[in-house]
Structure formats: C-alpha cells, structure tokens
Length: 255
Image (tube, rainbow, N blue to C red; front, side):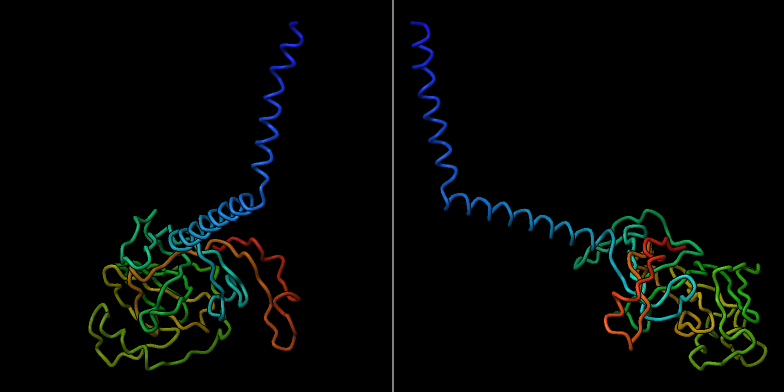
C-alpha cells in the first residue's frame, strides 16, 4: 500500500515536468527570448566599448616619422586617456586626472595650429620652465638634459624657419640684436602657465613646439601605453599590413 501511494504521487510531478519542457521549447518563445538576450548583451558590450574608448583607452596609428626610434610609422597604439583626466564627450567636463603631465612623458594631444588632429610628441617643458637649445643640446632651467631616446638624421646641419618667430614674445629678456632662431639653436624662452612644450624624438625631422608653439593643458588627450600592432608600410607590397608585420613590436611598452 505504501508503494502504491508513492507511485501515484510521482506521476503528476512527471507530467508537470514534461508540460514545462514543452512550453519552454515552443519555437516562437525560444527565438524571441534568445533575440532579446543577444540584443541586451550586444547593447551592453557596445555601451561599455564607448565608455572605455571615451574615458579609458583609445587606439591610435602613427602616420609620420617624427618620433622615429621610439615610435615607428605603422605602429598602432593603445593610449591611456584616464591618466591626465579624460574629457566626457559632448559635455566639456573632464574627469579628475590620476596625475599631471611630467617632463619626459610621451603624450597624445591636439596641436594649437590644427586642433582636430592628434599628434604624438615628447613633453620637455612644463609651465614656468626656461627652455633653450644650443646646437641640438636641450637645456632646461640652465641644465643640459640627457636624451638617450633622441635620434638625429642631420647631425651637422641646421635650418631656419620663419614660423619660429613666435618665440620672440616668450624670450627671457628682449634680445640686444635681432632674434634668429633655428631648428637647432633657439631660446631661452619661458613656458606660460597651463602650457607645455613638446619635441619629436626624431629631432631633425619633427614638426613640433619649436614651430607652432605651446600645447595647452586641456589639449592633452592621453599617454601612449603599448603598441598592439605594427607593420612596415610598403606601397609596392599588396596587403602590406598583413605581410610586413613587426612581431617584435607587438606588445612593446612605450617609454
């Protein structure tokens, strides 16, 4: 009698389970639920991507040789935008920085003469610094700076540029004679407040602060962190991005 009661009590439970399975496997309900789950996951992933790109890490490509030696044409960079305080798009509001820019940092910024483009250079002058270059030797606050990362392609030459005339307004003292700055010899000039002076590591082939002036604090976008991909551009080689990969630079930390 006891056995028959147990058998009778189990039967409704089995039927209920089978009915539940049939309900969950209805084609219409299953497809709709799956679609909603995937749409939700994709939306959250896309929102996370936009958030990280806006205030965290963004990818950039190096198109010129102005930082040759440190960065190469064809390098793709991950840039830490949170370090100096990322700007929230469309608001004009900046998040608090982890730290302020330091002398020697490689930075990504919008230059004053072309604010819609991104440049990558090395920061050499902070607000209040006195900068001078004597025959390719950088002097900061009266001290000659050792720059092991600098590369020279024209070690014995020098050039003059009319665009460097802006420096005269920032000289330490009015020159006793007409000021004629050159690529390799200029200054001494003083960096204004909330402004920075940047130079390319490929010092003889870099369009930088020597020619177009200081970088404002709010124009600094971030610090390159690592090279996530790199290839050697070759216009004569089809699919050079896939055939000329610099594997030794993938994951390279930028200093």
